[in-house]
Length: 405
Image 1 (cartoon, rainbow, N blue to C red):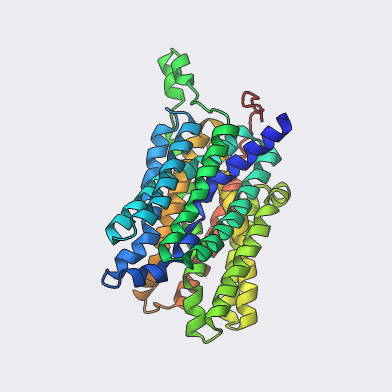
Image 2: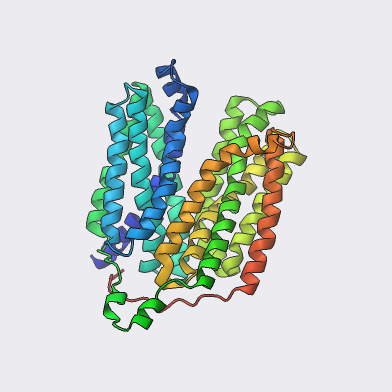
């Protein structure tokens, strides 16, 4: 019975991250949403996809403030409840584009509260190779279920376009699982237990720690940006170069998703082998994918490039969470993970403006975006390598067994 409860706890922890990977669900409905609101400004329709990411970015800073004051389980449950209400609520409020955007705003608030804590909770419950394995499984499992949700949404859209939002009902089941399986995780009240003011000050971030966290945040932002350029510009690239049909575009994205899932599932093994340099490994594969895209504008080239990109993405997400959970030590893992997630959310949003930026240099094409991806990847390979060589490895404390997992 205890072993079964532990398994359920792991599943519950992994499913929290699902709120960050369901973009495919709403993106698959953008065409139908455009038809439903023919007089609406196209930018408003696009906001149904991008607004949650913008809100999630700002929410990450709120999470930093509240994570040391409230039970993490409570924050997650509040976040996922808002997220589920916003998701399903869109079904009932789909008659007006502004009401629809309001529901997407709620999704952003909910996901912004819950998603950053997925890594924090994993870091607090597990340690060593088990933690690395669960980080990898989290990304893989969330990607699999996210894909299944998109398929479910597609079938629901056959009834009517707004029925796709009923797929968010799944999150009510996830909430029930978390209520049952996830242990209460109240904030550590160490500062209240320390009466000496000098010791109280010692728990605050020092200037050097802030500098280290800032550096990691910048690196994560740039690396996420480098990884997002490909998916956003791939369809345009295939069309511009007459490489394949829309069916091939969909196939290419599917190949990327499948490889990402399998790559995530073996992250634990690669982490044991390469340690922190898994991130460098991810950057190298991202670089190779862009080089192949540009060097071989053919069907085979696109397929191979997506394989490399999928491997890179599958390693990047869990590796970044591992880095964030240890960069300042276990005491500050909740804050550092929340801030790093904020950088990732910002990169996801700003990646849509890469082509506009490259247009300033006269190359506002998919090829120009891929060139920028190559430049960023090279910078990241060098920067992360130097950082890992110069920075000491944070040793994890022996895991406290108070959560019994």
